[in-house]
Structures are given as C-alpha cells and as structure tokens.
Image (cartoon, rainbow, N blue to C red; front, side, top):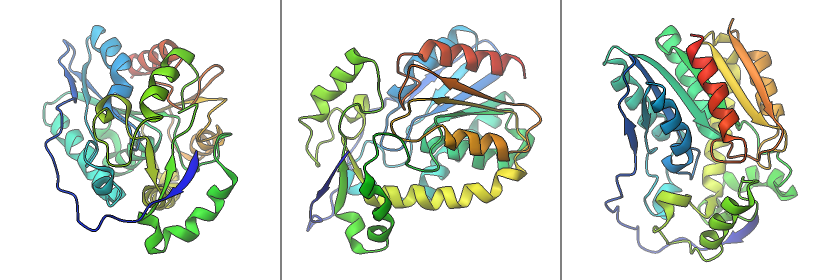
Length: 288
C-alpha cells in the first residue's frame, strides 16, 4: 500500500444507480447462508463459494454492504454502524423465512458476524470468519500504518488514502494480474469496475471505522456462544493469523474451529485455496 493525499471535493458527489450484482441463489434445503464481502470489496469475492454451497442445496445470499458501489467520496463518509445495519437487515429478512441461517464474512465483515452472534445468540445457527481483521498487521502493511490513528481524529481522514498495491490480497498470479490491470489505471473518482474488482483506494476514514468496530467487538467476544469457524491464511498480507487466534481463544462457543491455510493471501474466498475454504465451510455447516 502507498499513501496519497488528495483534497476533498468542493461539491458533494451525487448518489448514482448501481449495478444489481448481489448474488441470490435458491436451494432445496431449509438452510440459508449469507456471504459478506470485505470493506471496499464486492459480492464477486464470494462468487465461487456461493455457487459451491448452492450446488449442495443451500440458499445463498451475497449482499452488497451499504454505499459500496457508490463513489469513493460517498463511501469514505460511511460509518461502521451503517455497514452493519445493511447486513443486519438481510439477516433479519432471512430469519423470517423460517430457514436455519448462517452468516460468513470476509475481513472486516467477519467482525459483523461476531456482532450478529452476540446480538442474536442462537438465532444465528453458525458463524464463519474468513481472515477476520481486528488489526492491520499483515506483512504488506506499511510501517506508517501505526501513525494513522492520529490522522483519523482530524479532518485529514477524508483526504488521505491508501493506494492498493500488489499483491492485493491475492497469491494466485493469474487472478492478481487481472486485478492489477484494473487497479494500476484506476482513478479516485472511478466507479466502473468496482462491481468486479472493488475499490483501488482505501480511505483513512474507513481505517478509522474499522478501528472503532474492533474496539466494539473485542470486549464482546467472551459472550459469544454461537458455533464458529475461523479460516485464516498463514501468509495474510493484510491481517496476521494473530487476529483469528485472539478470537478463537476468547469466544465461549462450545463448537469452534480454527483452520490455517498455507498457500493463500488475504482474500481467501477467491485465492489459491478457495476449494479448501469451500470444503471446510461445508463440513462446518453440515455438522450443525
């Protein structure tokens, strides 16, 4: 990641109609799995897993979190409570069908899974945390990341961005090349390509929101009893496996499992070991 500074726009950008790229697949079982992309990500991150689960009879919903797909100048003002509320609404809607409902989240969204588990208890049948991110402490996170909390409490948080650099959370060279062709040419105001690749820039304001969310979640971990699966890559470039180890050691779930991957980076649902991610997910779901 490289740090860049860009002044705020003089005019507030308008909201636009965004592509309907949410994934909704109906299955034969009375079981629904909600798969949630990461912060600045896209439902496309969950596509392989969604279709794999659906082939086994699960209904699958891959929603788009609040303000994702809009201009980055809109997204950067979004608070974590708004993101959580957008997922919570989908979860409550799924509960109303009478299905047994599971939720899996990638990165920041894994923390939303933990919030749902604490709030709804056994109404959440099971939770899955893919590379949960409480701390940005992966091997590709720059040293000055430690200084960003200082900027987060000033107006600068809306003017400072990370520019995504390789490996983009992806170890697979072919897939990483596809992302690089888009990210290397992307501009701050671009919205085309977001539905497929996500955002090429990460505002410091959203880093601040993740920091606030982590501070909310950590004290709640000991109250979580929901069955929980954690899958984390040993070589995570964004958030080290320490994140999953802390969660695993803190939650009170009688049923819990931590799987450490050996050949993936952060976006494990789309990377080299996505088949293992899918098989571990299915094994967990079918045991509940």
